[in-house]
Length: 344
Length: 261
Ligand SMILES: Nc1ncnc2c1ncn2[C@@H]1O[C@H](COP(=O)(O)OP(=O)(O)O)[C@@H](O)[C@H]1O
Ligand SMILES: [Mg+2]
Image 1 (cartoon, each protein chain N blue to C red):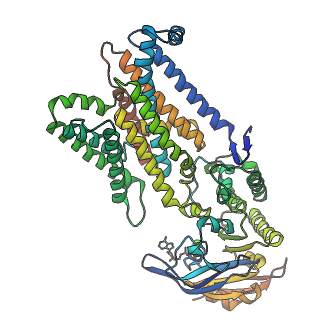
Image 2 (cartoon, rainbow over the protein chains, first blue to last red):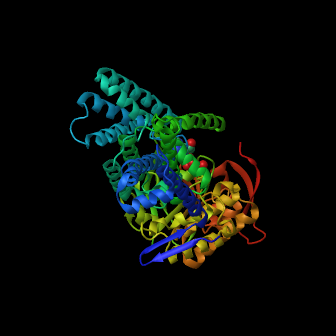
Image 3 (tube, rainbow over the protein chains, first blue to last red):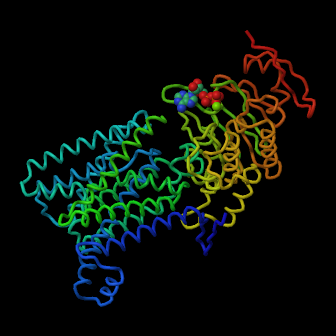
């Protein structure tokens, strides 16, 4: 079936043609959306024009594209991609199609931690505090959800989601509380961030988040192999020499880091982490790294498109991307819940 | 060699004890078949032999070393265990699944060496699933799936194979195919095979060594001729039967009469 084998010194892989072709297609879509996003805005810049502007290395067009649009587009892609990968890993590891940073309360935990930091410390203390708070919030929630869902050494999917949704609501209460006790001017900026927005992204944001995500992936990518083994029987996985609990824990950690980082910069972007991996699994039927890559591409495309819509269709308003992401994501989640309850 | 033995094993789940003080010496390079009624502890014993269940007392010794203290990967290269009814992962192709058997030999860099490829292709041919290689596993029939699991265990290329009811979902022809395959592996490469079977006649025909279990204890053990007697079958299963020689191969055959009251 046209599969390819790569063997170079110690490196060897079998590359299945079909999944990688589909992943490539979704990546291509992602690039096209990025290019369109760079061209669109308050001023329409046809690709030829902005390419010429880029070559010149100065002037108004160069400024618009590299200083305003590019960081924003890149940040949107990073946020969407990271949330999607986080969701894909969680769905795979927990063998649960309903798992995602949203349904497990991870997003809620990260949001609550960041808003608490904004309200109580007024955003003081250095640029690193916000991502650290987001990651800590995500990890704290995921750990407590897992601990609460554990019963007799086993975790059932529904228990996990129910407790996750409960913890998410609790985190929502914390957010509200913080908005009330915090200073008034905090509220509106926090709201925009909570919904999920890449408004006002600058180059430093895009580069920092990109660098941190790359760092996480450095550890995460070798672990993807274990995410593929997760749907197996624990007994069978142990039989081929995989320590199931250890790899599961490590992967949940990676998923929390990805979601925490994405949320620190882009806000919650509700449900990207749920439906991007879902679409990827529909699209690339066979699980594997290609499917994970497709999820990333879809997540990035969705957030970029949502941001494009938010900042072009409602001019002069610049609406947060999260509004449009949630408008697509929430009905999707409800539909999925209905289908899952029907089949189980 | 990779002789495996159980030493005063006590096994259970939570507070419930299933097997108590069981000692067992699996003959090297032979095919051992475990028989016994439902719930007699066959699967439990096999899980413990495959170090997937921690004994509450006693030890399992693989080549003289306590299996619970040996590295997981090391064990995975020495013994393969096929659980009774493994969950079928959705969205994996047959080849992907069989290739998992190579996991104990792989690293992050090397995931498809020439040896991996050769062993996987051969395992799929031997288990008669080569034609299904690119199919997604959860679209297969129960019997086809079972052969995929067997291919996975074979691809793991271990000197010791533990199989829990490997032929339960197969049609009669494929049952014999699998048993013949296991016999070939046993005869050609001196693999030690331990399996649970429910068909007494096939157990007697393919087993060199039979273990009869009841209530977590070994009731009878030995060659098919010594174990397959009317008295033993009654002691193991509460079944009255007559033993006649198998017309094809002469091993003892059990013709059931009825349940012992
Ligand atoms: N995961 C488990 N938890 C609790 N009890 C179990 C579990 N698995 C098996 N048992 C019990 O242990 C006993 C032996 O089961 P098993 O070894 O599966 O029997 P067999 O394979 O001979 O049919 C049975 O009474 C069964 O109910
Ligand atoms: Mg059993």
